Image 1 (tube, helix red, strand yellow):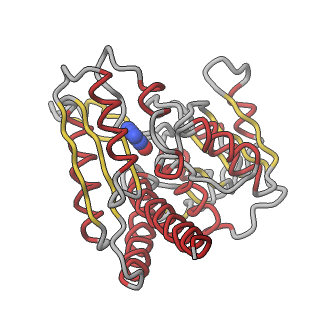
Image 2: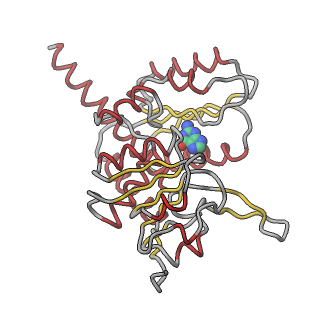
Length: 298
Ligand code: GUN
């Protein structure tokens, strides 16, 4: 069964541009400059593009961008020492270590070295635990972006059936926590789930974050559902070129869904906008805490 009409496109690109503008306007009123440090180790081409986009948008939002580019041969000890210096640097409010790291560097050890108050990626155990416990912290950027898009098109999410396909620490687990906090009934599915099509068909909200090109087919989608596609997969386009596709077979899904994010231009642009938002949040909290501790001193 199809709805007969095509799903409405969720314009993540436009939403992200408006969010960045709101952040820029707020930064201008702060009276100090929030700073974001981004650490890139090695030469991964996709990571290089992400990092230069982050730096550009940080500066456009009126924040200071500190880029640290290190060779792939960097030792874990040197990387940890850099993180330690950034933790101690008062001009730095947010720290992001771009993943994946080159072989030989343990991402968990490096992430854990980041001060949770500066962990704008929301990946430290402290921030993951705070999210799970419903306490304020810093929330991973892509999941936060997904939630903002969902609230923008659906309003209150209470009581809705949400299915998250994918269980990564970066996306699947935190988005499930955020949806639970919004009173959704959340199912986490993954590559080992039995009857994945059936599970997906229950979803009023379907979040695809598996990293497998067009794995979720049109007839897995409940008519009228809202589909958030976090996947960014490069596939052959047939003419020797490549193109980007999501985890959802878009054309077929668009005939079933009520709302759907495109790839590219859906969730992708929200990640950096939310990184800037987290940097602003971290900067505001530090400023507030500094004011409190100064009062305590006098
Ligand atoms: N690599 C791909 N996405 C991300 C992200 O959101 N944060 C970090 N640190 N690395 C990434």
